[in-house]
Image (cartoon, rainbow, N blue to C red; front, side, top):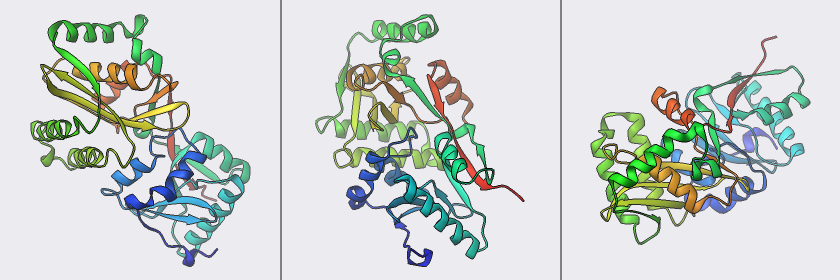
Length: 302
């Protein structure tokens, strides 16, 4: 296949049946590797996709053109990498791969020893936790988290948890709109993009086969969370929103959601911290089992 024959195009909801099987057959630990995540964020980043030699490839044109590591059988992946390399040579642009995991880079090294280098981006490393530990918060290291939960329960005796469904979807949508106003999301481009993704996730909740949880106090929705299976061992939490003025609402929805919806999975991927110091501190405080590191791959300068 020649590169000029390849048509990269925008991702649409109707592409789920084309893309989802690739993610299922060739699972990854990276939070980006789901159809829902790619679809929702493609409205804010210039990302398109193409099927090349029985592999799935995404292309970003945010800065210089770059590609994801192809998804498919190893032999097909190597063939596609050669095609992408020829494409960049013809256009006299650098060969760049993004969101490359350690396992993918190791595979690249076996095929092209010493030819490429990777720069891992700490801001985009996923935090992965043992689901049982998030549900029970057992042990000395999570003692403070248990205290937050206990304080929440004693402060708000009339609290309840329920699974997110069509019955409470609209209430979550209204809570999200209030959260957006409270946090002045319209004044910040990144916050606004994240809020658009949240609202669209609620709009497409059924179509994207999401799983969610809802926290109430005195019958009012004060927090909700949304995620989906990433692979057989891991569930990924994409969205978590709670009112900041309700102390303990975030730890509570986190713990309750895992305890009720996710214990059939060994791990919970809670995505990255995007370089936010506060978010990094909060995510590290839950003691991740490991991080899924991802980086940018370029050819070494000869």
